Every structure is written in C-alpha cells, then in structure tokens.
Length: 327
Ligand code: MLT
Figure (tube, protein in one colour):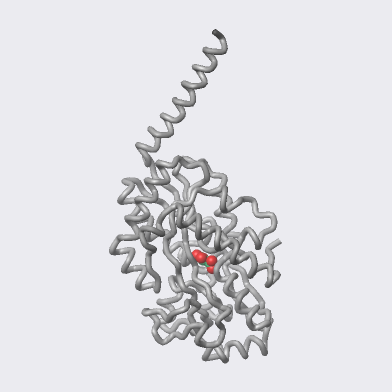
C-alpha cells in the first residue's frame, strides 16, 4: 500500500511539474525578458540585439531589455547565460565567438553545444578593414606592405580573445606572417572611438559598426571580408580581389536561451524572432548597415544548432594552425 501511495505521489508530482511547465509556457512571458549582449553598448552586436529586441517586445507583449556584459572576448556574458535560470527570462545574442571560444579557451566554463538552447540565427555581418583616417597606407596592398615592414609598431584594436575583431586580426596577421601589437577592449564600440580619435591604428570590424564612419570619412577603409562587395560601400574592394583571400569571414549572430528551457517557450521565442526577421524596420536598418536578416528557415533552433556545430569544427582547425590561445 505504502509503495503504491509513493508511486502515485511521484506520478502526481511529475504531472504537476509538467503541468506547471506547460502552464508557465502558456502564459510566457509574464514579465520583462533580458537579452545579454556579451560586449559593450554601442557596438555591432549591441546594435543587432537592440533592433530585434524592439520588435520581439511588441510580439511578446513584454519589454525585451538588453543587458551588456562585456569581457573576455564575449565569454563572460555567455557564461552568465549558461548558468542562468532556464525559465525563458534570460537570453543571449552572440556571434561567431560562440564557435571560436571552445578552441581559444582551453578551460572555457561552458559548452556552447550543450549548455544552451538555440532559438535561431539572426544575421551574418561582413567585416571591414579600417584604420585611423590619417594612417599612411591608402590601399590594402600598401597596408599589407606597411604591416610587414612595421609589425609590432602597428597597433591593432580588438574586442577581446574570442571576438570577431580578434579572429579577423588573427587571420590578417597569419596571412601576412607579421604580428601587430594588439589592444583589447570590452567591445568594438569603445575600440572604434579610439580609432576615430587616432589613439589606435586599425581594426577589422563589422559593417554594422563601420559603415557610417567610413561614409563620413572618419576612418580610412581598405577592404571588406565578404566574398562580394557591399551595396552600401560599392567602392570598397573585397580582400579576395585584393589578393588576401585568406582573410574572409562573416560574423553570424544567433539567439540562445539556457539549456533545458521549456520547448514551448523556445518555440514562442522562435516565433517572435521570425517576426523580427520579417519586420520592415529591421530589414531597412540592417540594409543601411550592410547586412540582411536571415530567412525564416534559418531563424530556427535546428539551423542555429547546425551552424554552431559546423563552425566549431571549421575554426578549430584554423585556430590550432595559427596557435593562438587565450589560456
Ligand atoms: C561587439 O559588439 O563589440 C563585437 O561584436 C565585438 C567583436 O566581436 O569584435
């Protein structure tokens, strides 16, 4: 009798928990949702996150609030979300850094493929090689020769080991076989301020953070790292057409929740993300910044999981060959 009661009680508890999970998911969200951006405010990832957060807020009927947690090339903020409650109220917008960190950091405190519930891809942003406006070289060929000749006297800004700007810099230094002096920041936002101010020589940064500065002549631009030229910067050659095809990278971004987040909540967030991808304001603002939202088929958990897995494998080989590690 006693065992039967215990079994019944256990069964009731499980049913109760499932019911609560489903009930919770049904009413989700009932309060504001936080999206962690693992870099400083005002930078490229922040720009992308704030644009989609606006539209997702409208669809979810609750504020989607961006919280900037910079540091350690994005791994600090990502680590914070990996250990956050999986109730749907703490999310992460992160980029290609999710795929490079497992190789760059040999003691990374989280596993990108298992500690997160992917919600969907967002966009893939081309990068641009830019420098302070009074920097001597005028073309990519001149820049390459200048870096080879001056090496560590050239200062290269980046947003920490694990950031996109660090990855692109690593590809450039590897291709030229010429190390520069790297200057880390908590994000590309403050790095760009110092480039414009002339305190640092150069950076490879996302078009979402450089397009308006390039157009305003506040920085000198050398090339874009995408296979094709950008409609927004038609005169800017690609690295490939300038003889540096090894320096090709686009910065894909994704939205994540902590692992174990209820499937119904993940689906609700996927729907809101897809609304943002089809939103006219997001489409036009992304276009002004040299990028596009992904398709509905890409703004899905499955597509993000596949992208993450294939990119971890791709960059492992490149990073190990370059021998650049954070620890
Ligand atoms: C940022 O938002 O600051 C960037 O994504 C930094 C980077 O990865 O280069």
